[in-house]
Image 1 (cartoon, rainbow, N blue to C red):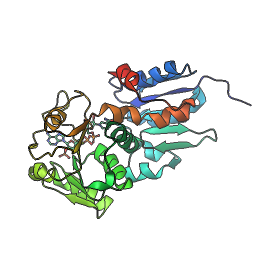
Image 2: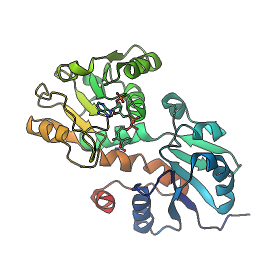
Image 3: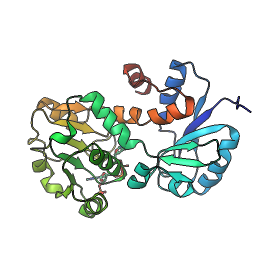
Image 4: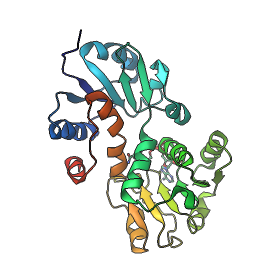
Length: 276
Ligand code: NAP
């Protein structure tokens, strides 16, 4: 029997009101004239598993999960993709027709696709990448940079132990750089990434010295509020190619949307405008 129900998807967080995903998926559903709805759902951690057992019966084909559920969901899922296992967290869930719950992580994919779109000249194999931060987002960034062939990844984090842990988890191509040395380690990097929350509205500014940045270096910030962070402003003035973090947020949503609603969506100016 074919399923004639309108496909439902959504984002589960706690809280969830800040999420831009409903705007994004809503825009794509309207753009392509597709049947379907994408709904924000505030679900407390102790109710997460019960929600996951119920949602498929209600017509949900999948969900995104955000803070604080990205790790917990790995225990609930029946199948976990290799990249989600490597990162230790999932953000995209598929409720399969056979009843199995499949967990994937598309953050690294979104990160790389955003760079490919915003800095098409960037050659991953051309030189080292410098990553500021060692939190959850950094794990996805590092896994994806290793996958596309970056020869060396320098990680600098306020709490050095977290950077050391990443070296232990990801191996020989990782080099840990003291937080106070971060500025120096950017000088010959082909790519510089801010994966800390510094520079975000309401958070302290990123104070790493930036005068070592060379023209031609690709610089990207995962922070997208504001869109043009101080890092990107300074880097642009020094002749770097700058890529903002909004594109990563959009690109990471593409695989889920395609899987749930059957259409690969475009990432274009209209998409950006819809969620700004
Ligand atoms: P997280 O796990 O909480 O990690 C936060 C990172 O920021 C850690 O490395 C932390 O260093 C550092 N940090 C925080 N306050 C600091 C301070 N005062 N001085 C120095 N370092 C500080 O967060 P996350 O999930 O990795 O997310 C990081 C940022 O990326 C957030 O702004 C998030 O919104 C953004 N993000 C964007 C996208 C996108 O699609 N564009 C996707 C994912 C995340 P310590 O280890 O020393 O605490």
